[in-house]
Length: 304
Image 1 (cartoon, rainbow, N blue to C red):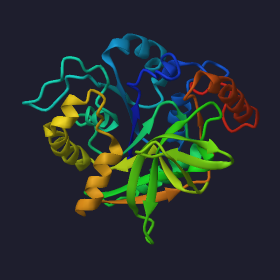
Image 2 (cartoon, rainbow, N blue to C red; image 1 turned 135 degrees about the horizontal axis):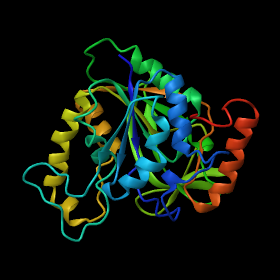
Image 3 (cartoon, one colour; image 1 turned 180 degrees about the vertical axis):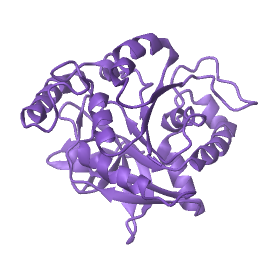
Image 4 (tube, rainbow, N blue to C red; image 1 turned 45 degrees about the vertical axis):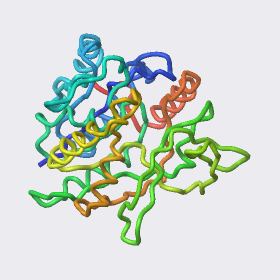
């Protein structure tokens, strides 16, 4: 069974200043996720599922979905603040989405095969999809709790225009993930990669420290685990009173690892990330994509 690619595209991109998921950066107006989907198809993925907000469905269908017709089956799922388990309601003043793992949950009714979750605004490169696609496609039928993530080296994932958010990872001697901690402010300071800790202090780390760029490989029972733990998350008063609390994928993954329910293989890549965290990142990203086209790695027009 071919794996499915789930793309998280519901965020507004507040630091970028617009719907960066729909921004044309390639020579023929291709978006970053067009390149991810092209690479995923090359790597053997058989279906794509987008998680978006209902309010830009029409624009998304017109600008994005049409181009994939005849290339790969595609479906839309919608993330909304009130998409909560029975018995829970959204605080009336909350405007922030419930986070990446809540977004993943929106796909539970349409994904029945091993799947990979990615961000839409990160340029991961083809090797990333090859390694995660190989892992997922080689899982024995009916596998449960055998997950994976692509671990980028933190020094290869920074922006020249401000801090970035990354999940900093630790792994054991078998290359299995032991912890992943979301750090929302990471940048190079005096030549050293550093993150801001809970006390507001900057902590230096090695350039080759593995980080999550939200490239995760799961099997369908992950939705069951997530539904149950989301109820626990919502049952904690601090998560309801804090209008910015989020149900992150690393939060769920950490629980499954600590419970012994799942293992998560860290798949190494030396690839250099690029993307559009900030508006100032855009010109450099356009230039890098054009260079890949000029080198023949991608065709001038991806989906003809």
